Image 1: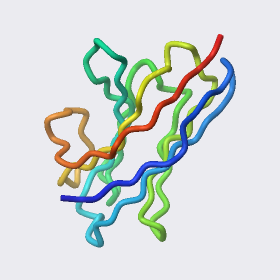
Image 2 (image 1 turned 135 degrees about the vertical axis):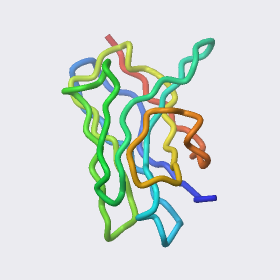
Image 3 (image 1 turned 180 degrees about the vertical axis):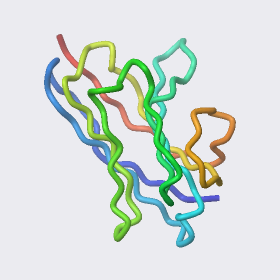
Image 4 (image 1 turned 120 degrees about the vertical axis):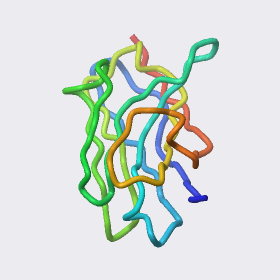
Length: 124
């Protein structure tokens, strides 16, 4: 399994921006797809974006498309989640995840490694 360590998160006002980062331990990370999911208590985990480390595609969840991006730093084995124009409904615990695949995927069941989660709170 890939070890994933998240950083970032916190409290931000609606309309603001926040950046989460996820550092991956795996040296063969080019064989993986990296993704972000979020979860609100009492609700199912929601797909946010995912990206193939080797260039096999990228997907965005409908609710964040046009506001969030998922940049990759190959030199640092780090994937980020850049969140812009945040809304109160973006409040959730955000999880970084890795799937052993070269093609981007949106299916939660494809992701076998997960970070510890980080809280993002957007105030109105």
